[in-house]
Length: 277
Image 1 (tube, rainbow, N blue to C red):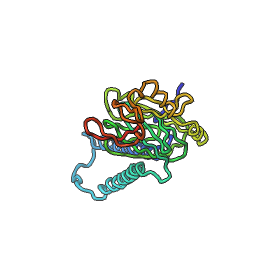
Image 2: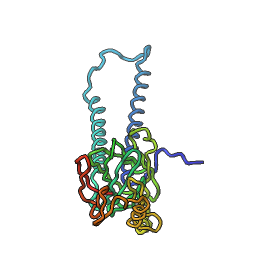
Image 3: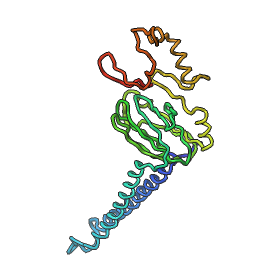
Image 4: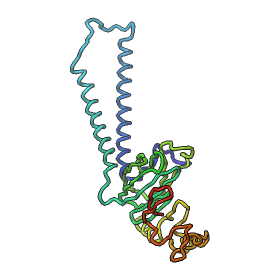
Protein backbone atom coordinates (compact mmCIF):
# COMPACT_ATOMS: atom_id res chain seq x y z
CA UNK A 1 0.00 0.00 0.00
CA UNK A 2 1.36 3.41 -0.98
CA UNK A 3 2.45 5.67 1.83
CA UNK A 4 0.25 8.73 2.25
CA UNK A 5 2.10 11.93 1.32
CA UNK A 6 0.89 15.32 2.48
CA UNK A 7 3.19 17.04 -0.04
CA UNK A 8 5.60 16.13 -2.84
CA UNK A 9 9.06 15.14 -1.67
CA UNK A 10 11.53 17.99 -1.15
CA UNK A 11 14.23 17.55 -3.80
CA UNK A 12 15.99 20.93 -3.68
CA UNK A 13 17.50 23.24 -1.09
CA UNK A 14 14.78 25.79 -1.83
CA UNK A 15 12.06 23.18 -1.23
CA UNK A 16 13.25 22.67 2.34
CA UNK A 17 13.02 26.40 3.07
CA UNK A 18 9.56 26.67 1.53
CA UNK A 19 8.32 23.68 3.52
CA UNK A 20 9.53 25.22 6.79
CA UNK A 21 7.58 28.39 6.05
CA UNK A 22 4.53 26.37 4.98
CA UNK A 23 4.40 24.31 8.17
CA UNK A 24 5.05 27.32 10.41
CA UNK A 25 2.11 29.16 8.81
CA UNK A 26 -0.09 26.09 9.23
CA UNK A 27 0.96 25.72 12.88
CA UNK A 28 0.20 29.41 13.58
CA UNK A 29 -3.18 29.03 11.88
CA UNK A 30 -4.07 26.00 14.02
CA UNK A 31 -2.86 27.63 17.27
CA UNK A 32 -4.77 30.87 16.77
CA UNK A 33 -7.87 29.02 15.57
CA UNK A 34 -7.86 26.98 18.79
CA UNK A 35 -7.33 30.10 20.94
CA UNK A 36 -10.13 32.05 19.25
CA UNK A 37 -12.55 29.12 19.32
CA UNK A 38 -11.76 28.43 23.00
CA UNK A 39 -12.38 32.08 23.92
CA UNK A 40 -15.64 32.15 21.95
CA UNK A 41 -16.84 28.96 23.67
CA UNK A 42 -15.83 30.24 27.13
CA UNK A 43 -17.45 33.68 26.74
CA UNK A 44 -20.58 32.20 25.14
CA UNK A 45 -20.99 29.79 28.05
CA UNK A 46 -20.16 32.32 30.77
CA UNK A 47 -22.37 35.13 29.52
CA UNK A 48 -25.21 33.15 28.01
CA UNK A 49 -28.72 34.20 28.90
CA UNK A 50 -29.69 33.16 32.41
CA UNK A 51 -26.22 32.91 33.94
CA UNK A 52 -25.62 34.82 37.20
CA UNK A 53 -22.73 37.15 36.29
CA UNK A 54 -22.28 40.85 36.96
CA UNK A 55 -23.31 42.71 33.84
CA UNK A 56 -23.29 46.16 35.43
CA UNK A 57 -20.74 48.76 34.33
CA UNK A 58 -19.50 46.80 31.25
CA UNK A 59 -15.93 47.59 30.15
CA UNK A 60 -15.73 49.40 26.83
CA UNK A 61 -11.96 49.81 26.62
CA UNK A 62 -8.88 48.02 27.93
CA UNK A 63 -5.52 49.15 26.52
CA UNK A 64 -3.54 46.28 28.01
CA UNK A 65 -5.91 43.67 26.56
CA UNK A 66 -5.87 45.32 23.13
CA UNK A 67 -2.06 45.50 23.09
CA UNK A 68 -1.88 41.87 24.24
CA UNK A 69 -3.73 40.56 21.20
CA UNK A 70 -2.41 43.17 18.73
CA UNK A 71 1.37 43.28 19.26
CA UNK A 72 2.10 39.50 19.12
CA UNK A 73 -0.04 39.14 15.98
CA UNK A 74 1.73 42.15 14.40
CA UNK A 75 5.19 40.76 15.19
CA UNK A 76 4.31 37.31 13.88
CA UNK A 77 2.74 38.77 10.73
CA UNK A 78 5.80 40.92 9.97
CA UNK A 79 8.05 37.96 10.68
CA UNK A 80 6.22 35.72 8.21
CA UNK A 81 6.19 38.55 5.64
CA UNK A 82 9.95 39.09 5.97
CA UNK A 83 10.68 35.36 5.78
CA UNK A 84 8.49 34.80 2.69
CA UNK A 85 9.78 37.94 0.94
CA UNK A 86 13.37 36.77 1.40
CA UNK A 87 12.52 33.37 -0.09
CA UNK A 88 10.66 34.99 -2.98
CA UNK A 89 13.63 37.26 -3.77
CA UNK A 90 16.31 34.57 -3.34
CA UNK A 91 14.89 32.25 -5.99
CA UNK A 92 15.44 34.99 -8.62
CA UNK A 93 19.04 35.77 -7.62
CA UNK A 94 21.17 32.83 -8.79
CA UNK A 95 24.72 32.39 -7.46
CA UNK A 96 27.62 33.14 -9.82
CA UNK A 97 28.65 29.48 -10.01
CA UNK A 98 25.21 28.31 -11.18
CA UNK A 99 25.07 26.13 -14.28
CA UNK A 100 22.95 28.01 -16.84
CA UNK A 101 20.29 26.32 -18.93
CA UNK A 102 18.26 28.26 -21.51
CA UNK A 103 14.60 27.25 -21.74
CA UNK A 104 12.08 28.10 -24.47
CA UNK A 105 8.40 27.40 -23.91
CA UNK A 106 6.08 26.96 -26.88
CA UNK A 107 2.74 25.35 -27.59
CA UNK A 108 3.11 22.67 -26.34
CA UNK A 109 6.64 21.68 -25.37
CA UNK A 110 9.82 22.78 -23.60
CA UNK A 111 13.12 23.34 -25.43
CA UNK A 112 16.30 23.42 -23.34
CA UNK A 113 19.86 24.32 -24.28
CA UNK A 114 22.85 23.98 -21.96
CA UNK A 115 25.72 26.47 -21.93
CA UNK A 116 27.93 23.96 -23.79
CA UNK A 117 25.42 23.84 -26.67
CA UNK A 118 23.72 20.57 -25.75
CA UNK A 119 20.00 20.69 -26.51
CA UNK A 120 17.10 18.70 -25.15
CA UNK A 121 13.41 18.39 -25.83
CA UNK A 122 11.10 18.17 -22.77
CA UNK A 123 14.03 17.04 -20.61
CA UNK A 124 16.70 18.87 -18.62
CA UNK A 125 19.62 16.83 -17.27
CA UNK A 126 21.42 18.41 -14.29
CA UNK A 127 24.00 17.23 -11.73
CA UNK A 128 22.95 16.80 -8.10
CA UNK A 129 24.06 19.37 -5.49
CA UNK A 130 24.98 21.89 -8.20
CA UNK A 131 23.09 25.20 -8.53
CA UNK A 132 21.21 25.51 -11.82
CA UNK A 133 19.99 28.78 -13.33
CA UNK A 134 17.09 28.70 -15.80
CA UNK A 135 16.93 31.59 -18.30
CA UNK A 136 13.51 31.36 -19.91
CA UNK A 137 11.44 32.94 -22.67
CA UNK A 138 8.28 31.97 -24.57
CA UNK A 139 7.94 31.59 -28.31
CA UNK A 140 4.21 32.31 -28.32
CA UNK A 141 1.95 32.76 -25.25
CA UNK A 142 2.54 32.93 -21.49
CA UNK A 143 3.56 29.62 -19.93
CA UNK A 144 4.68 28.74 -16.39
CA UNK A 145 7.61 26.44 -15.60
CA UNK A 146 6.70 24.48 -12.46
CA UNK A 147 8.45 21.61 -10.65
CA UNK A 148 6.52 20.63 -7.48
CA UNK A 149 9.41 18.72 -5.88
CA UNK A 150 11.65 21.78 -6.17
CA UNK A 151 8.88 24.19 -5.04
CA UNK A 152 9.74 26.52 -7.92
CA UNK A 153 7.56 28.20 -10.50
CA UNK A 154 7.91 31.20 -12.76
CA UNK A 155 6.05 32.59 -15.74
CA UNK A 156 7.71 32.18 -19.14
CA UNK A 157 6.70 35.17 -21.23
CA UNK A 158 7.04 36.17 -24.90
CA UNK A 159 9.46 39.04 -25.52
CA UNK A 160 10.91 38.98 -22.00
CA UNK A 161 13.55 36.84 -20.31
CA UNK A 162 12.74 35.54 -16.84
CA UNK A 163 15.00 33.45 -14.65
CA UNK A 164 15.07 31.42 -11.46
CA UNK A 165 17.44 28.88 -9.92
CA UNK A 166 17.52 25.78 -7.76
CA UNK A 167 20.02 23.35 -6.26
CA UNK A 168 18.77 19.74 -6.60
CA UNK A 169 19.54 17.57 -3.59
CA UNK A 170 18.15 14.18 -4.63
CA UNK A 171 18.95 12.05 -7.65
CA UNK A 172 15.77 11.27 -9.56
CA UNK A 173 13.32 12.22 -12.30
CA UNK A 174 10.99 15.11 -11.53
CA UNK A 175 7.97 16.21 -13.53
CA UNK A 176 7.82 19.64 -15.17
CA UNK A 177 4.37 21.19 -15.62
CA UNK A 178 3.11 24.22 -17.47
CA UNK A 179 1.15 25.77 -14.61
CA UNK A 180 -0.86 28.35 -16.54
CA UNK A 181 -3.47 27.65 -19.22
CA UNK A 182 -1.76 28.15 -22.58
CA UNK A 183 -4.09 26.56 -25.12
CA UNK A 184 -5.99 23.43 -26.07
CA UNK A 185 -3.10 21.04 -25.34
CA UNK A 186 -2.03 22.76 -22.11
CA UNK A 187 -2.42 19.55 -20.08
CA UNK A 188 0.00 17.76 -22.40
CA UNK A 189 2.76 20.36 -22.02
CA UNK A 190 5.08 18.56 -19.65
CA UNK A 191 8.63 17.40 -19.29
CA UNK A 192 11.20 16.14 -16.83
CA UNK A 193 14.14 17.45 -14.85
CA UNK A 194 16.52 14.51 -14.56
CA UNK A 195 18.91 14.88 -11.63
CA UNK A 196 21.99 12.68 -11.92
CA UNK A 197 25.07 12.00 -9.84
CA UNK A 198 28.15 13.91 -10.91
CA UNK A 199 29.63 10.78 -12.52
CA UNK A 200 26.45 9.91 -14.43
CA UNK A 201 26.00 13.48 -15.60
CA UNK A 202 29.56 13.59 -16.96
CA UNK A 203 28.95 10.29 -18.77
CA UNK A 204 25.74 11.71 -20.21
CA UNK A 205 27.62 14.78 -21.45
CA UNK A 206 30.47 12.70 -22.85
CA UNK A 207 27.96 10.56 -24.74
CA UNK A 208 26.59 13.57 -26.60
CA UNK A 209 23.99 14.61 -24.07
CA UNK A 210 20.48 15.15 -25.37
CA UNK A 211 19.27 14.93 -28.91
CA UNK A 212 19.27 18.46 -30.33
CA UNK A 213 16.26 19.06 -32.49
CA UNK A 214 15.31 21.63 -35.05
CA UNK A 215 12.03 22.87 -36.53
CA UNK A 216 12.22 20.20 -39.21
CA UNK A 217 12.66 17.47 -36.63
CA UNK A 218 16.31 16.72 -37.50
CA UNK A 219 18.17 14.98 -34.69
CA UNK A 220 21.82 15.86 -34.14
CA UNK A 221 22.62 12.32 -33.04
CA UNK A 222 21.11 10.10 -35.71
CA UNK A 223 22.80 6.73 -35.86
CA UNK A 224 26.58 7.02 -36.24
CA UNK A 225 26.39 10.13 -38.44
CA UNK A 226 27.64 13.52 -37.37
CA UNK A 227 25.36 16.52 -37.78
CA UNK A 228 27.18 17.56 -40.96
CA UNK A 229 26.98 14.05 -42.43
CA UNK A 230 23.31 13.76 -41.56
CA UNK A 231 22.71 17.13 -43.20
CA UNK A 232 24.52 16.00 -46.33
CA UNK A 233 22.37 12.86 -46.44
CA UNK A 234 19.16 14.92 -46.26
CA UNK A 235 20.54 17.38 -48.84
CA UNK A 236 20.90 14.53 -51.32
CA UNK A 237 17.69 12.75 -50.28
CA UNK A 238 15.50 15.78 -50.96
CA UNK A 239 17.51 16.77 -54.09
CA UNK A 240 18.30 20.23 -52.77
CA UNK A 241 21.14 20.42 -55.30
CA UNK A 242 18.64 20.71 -58.14
CA UNK A 243 18.22 24.37 -57.16
CA UNK A 244 21.05 25.20 -54.74
CA UNK A 245 24.08 24.64 -56.98
CA UNK A 246 27.35 26.42 -56.18
CA UNK A 247 30.00 27.71 -58.56
CA UNK A 248 29.71 28.82 -62.18
CA UNK A 249 26.72 26.52 -62.80
CA UNK A 250 24.70 28.08 -59.99
CA UNK A 251 20.99 27.89 -60.68
CA UNK A 252 18.80 30.96 -60.68
CA UNK A 253 16.19 29.00 -58.75
CA UNK A 254 18.02 28.92 -55.43
CA UNK A 255 20.71 30.94 -53.70
CA UNK A 256 24.22 29.62 -53.21
CA UNK A 257 24.76 27.89 -49.89
CA UNK A 258 28.40 28.93 -49.59
CA UNK A 259 28.72 31.04 -46.45
CA UNK A 260 24.95 30.93 -45.95
CA UNK A 261 24.92 29.79 -42.30
CA UNK A 262 24.60 32.70 -39.84
CA UNK A 263 24.62 35.25 -42.68
CA UNK A 264 21.99 37.99 -43.12
CA UNK A 265 19.67 37.18 -46.02
CA UNK A 266 17.01 39.26 -47.77
CA UNK A 267 13.66 37.57 -48.46
CA UNK A 268 11.31 38.14 -51.38
CA UNK A 269 9.20 40.61 -49.38
CA UNK A 270 12.27 42.74 -48.64
CA UNK A 271 12.65 41.67 -45.01
CA UNK A 272 15.98 40.39 -43.73
CA UNK A 273 16.62 37.35 -41.54
CA UNK A 274 19.64 35.47 -40.20
CA UNK A 275 20.04 32.02 -41.77
CA UNK A 276 20.31 29.95 -38.58
CA UNK A 277 19.28 26.37 -37.75
